[in-house]
Length: 102
Image (tube, rainbow, N blue to C red):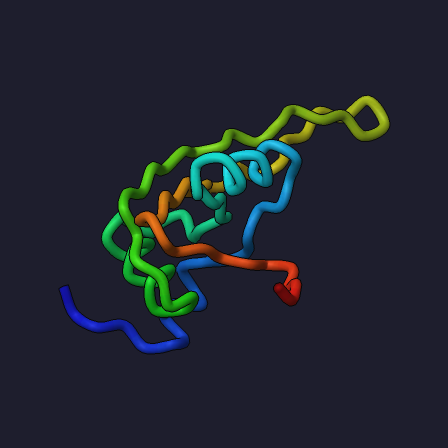
């Protein structure tokens, strides 16, 4: 696989998903959740996380989240779907999104 530039890496990882569930996964299992681009593949996600956060990735799981059906003034609509990646780190590595000092 070819090395990706910083712009390409930023296009793959869109945002970290910081929820109650993802926080518990991070504390207990060193797993972190990211919203990723629809066309992103597991090796690309792994390379992007390793490069941007200077960590070693153990595994990557990917999940497609389907958009919800919503109504606006009796008109049916649909929110867009998105792709989510669960990234597990190797022992000894951690990502701190909050920037807390130890």
